[in-house]
Image 1: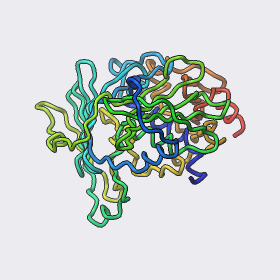
Image 2: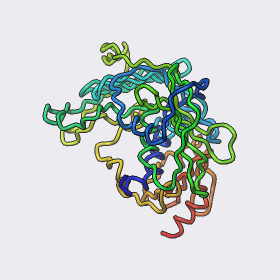
Image 3: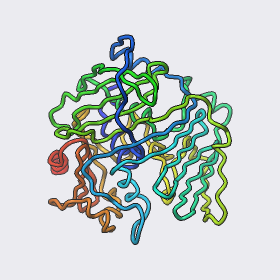
Length: 377
């Protein structure tokens, strides 16, 4: 595996978490089952060869990162950072539907409300029933030649699923990670092999990562992340129900309800991207969808630098990168603690340092390591 990819684990995981890359999550896997013995390498090969192109299922999240509850709505609360932090606390449930690389739907089941992300070819809808608002984003559909140039391996929109999260951890495996096979289990009624990733680092906040892999298809069914010094999982993302048949095509057709406020947006033809990223003011961001100018998984975000390697690495963003909402919104400000030269967000898995000049440092390391990295620059 290329060294450039190996060193970007925090750069991949942090956006997934803080930008609702961890939008949904999971419960513990079910009872143990009996499966033919396989090595860690054989299970990783199963994941690499998975050919699941269509599915529908229920995904559940549990996040116990030590953050206070942040309201998603109310006076002074806007979408964006508040919505991201909302999904880093407590438990959330969603329905996920996928049919190939061009069609997907996520229904976030809020209490007394529902949020939807619907991608169907060149159309993407983002709907929030709480205020009956919708954003319609139109994107150029790839040409036949572009479709033929897609990788031979089946692809799907980068949706908030265990597979999307597991792929980031698996891609970052290197010498700093011990990979072992744990006891097989049952997830969403399907037998699964369990891989455990144990950081060899003493600096990271992460104790271990467990990935449950479907024994038949190689599809990741669940991801559980444990933090050092915490008895319960800090974060989990798992299917509780899964159907690998093709969903009804009607699920990917969306018509705004009567009276809905609809905002139309068009992505320029020279910014083709699939799957799409929702506009900044969309009610429901798509957690893993790259922006039009997003770097490949082998590269850092634009303007970002990285110090350290693997689990210990720290991602640094330049001055002016800090979201203004974090410091201007009183509800969000309560999640930050004052430190020398700025403010910090600390959780059991991630630390984020926001300096007064707008520089941002983040990593799966203690706050002190971020402060040292900032002082060195």
